[in-house]
Image (cartoon, rainbow, N blue to C red):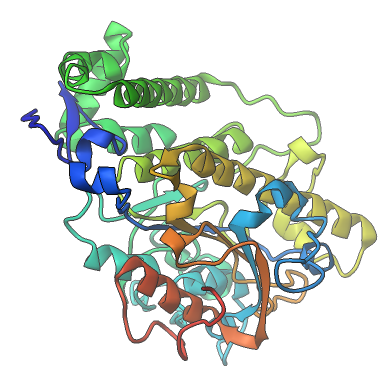
Length: 447
């Protein structure tokens, strides 16, 4: 492992088919910086996408600044209000038809991180633009093991015809490396776990996973010799931190395995959810925990997560909603449908609150992992019934290493490009660019 007096931030616990990155330990910090309290931690950013718009009367908060009143939909985040920015007035004008006719759901997904107009095609001649996450990933290349991490709670589709003549590539991918190349997300929790914690090539990792399963061993069992050697060089605080971290990895491994074995058990009248997981809520929470571990170990500093693709018709038995989400979104002011949608909106926020709480619970220096992150939650449709792309539902959690003044509701003029937010975030990440999609400048009011 090559451990000196000071550990490298890139130290791994290694074993056959295993490479477990470590959280920030005091032994990794130069002694002078630790003594002076002048420790700098990396800034991270993530994007979480929700589909089909929201019921805006239940989403919109009352008042501006720090004294705003939390809305019904956002209530699950009340205890985290000091860590949040509620951003109103942002828009994705490039998700509008702009002469291309129907297809708002495909355009919404395509535009969310690119702020570009998708070429309307269901063939191979797709064209969009570089997404904000990939702008950062390119400039951060080499600083982390993974340039970026793309996650989804849906399947992966890179071709075929989806919404109103648009390629499925637009609707099932948030991240775009360039104008013609989406970066496919991973929706299988086991594959994500192995990507974070398995060493060697994909083939070697797969072979070692099969061997572990045959031996009924954890991924940690193969790295324990390395862990014991490392422990001898650590102080009390680091030993405790390492133990807690390894236990969280083991617990995640158990949850992944339990999810794979769990049967589908839905009440009468409910449809089977789309995608790999049997339990959607547990799948989202598990993905959120993996996002936290990826940030905690500095495996990556850039993550995108498609909680559900726009146009998703998933049902939500956990909140008593039988009908599909997309079908309900065309509610035509039907009170029962509006109420069902409000329940779905609030449930999504509850799942996001789990991610916020997880990041907040992980100490890093004098603050938390959340303090050193910027996590955007939202979508590119405002009102799902009318397919509007302004007054978008957008939240940001975290303080961006002190660059973000959270705990406020900030209202921008109608049709303010969401791409302006992305430019400001890229500045905070230390990966600036002059233009992204339809940006018109930096977004003021964040600091």
